[in-house]
Image 1 (cartoon, helix red, strand yellow):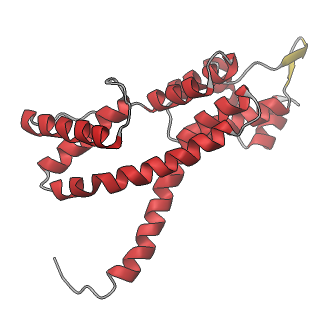
Image 2: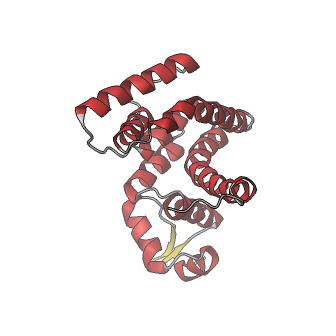
Length: 213
């Protein structure tokens, strides 16, 4: 198919397709004539994957390109690919006071010890959690930290489902893709599910609460 048909089939504008080609996210098509390039179903699938990672998963173009390179090389194990996906997501850092930062680091270290989680010191997610804990303390909502073990238990249960899906894939390539896609889109899915659950549960638990601000 020509680029116009590729655009119609995938729903991605031709200009965006050309951009992805320049950035290396999309493999070149097969040149059949001097001024004609053909694209196949694999290009349609890749475009859908790119749009899912960028538009729904919220990845930057550079982070998506990095993950797709990992996927294409096939040089990593599924566990390594999962790590690449988590590190590509990075961590949002926000400066807080030294006192809150030190207390937050203690909060996170204690949580990891209680859960028995083996986490690297440079893990972006570890830094993000530390910043969240520091912000909660700074805002006067340290009470949220009192239930952090409940959140951690729920997260561990979700992680067990995630890794089970990866492990059950028949090939290393599919395991790698599942690790990447499941991590990126899974975060968005869990966020949506949490908000839906909050809407449902609040109707049951807060419907009779007449307190005003």
